[in-house]
Amino acid sequence: MTRGISEVLAAEVRRRRTALHLTQQDLADMAGVSERFVRFIEQGKPSIQLDSLVAVLETLGLELQ
Image 1 (cartoon, rainbow, N blue to C red):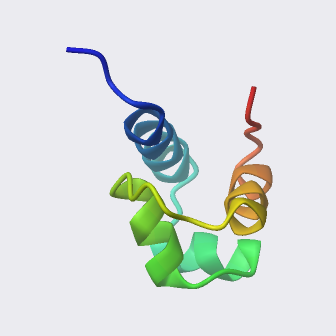
Image 2 (image 1 turned 135 degrees about the vertical axis):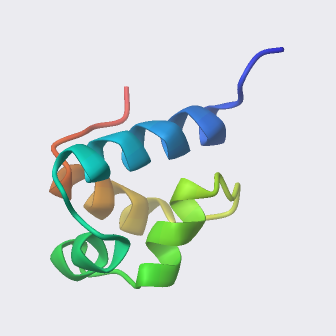
């Protein structure tokens, strides 16, 4: 079974956040988004705001390709 982009993104964000020893709240504060938004990303929620997502990814040193 193939994983969807939201599942791949969720796993990568969670992996990077934990590698940096950040809590979801830490990441949210650094990226200027809510902790709930970070949780939604890590749960693979399909409807998230792209600009907020990009802020989280940039905070983690990740980018969409």
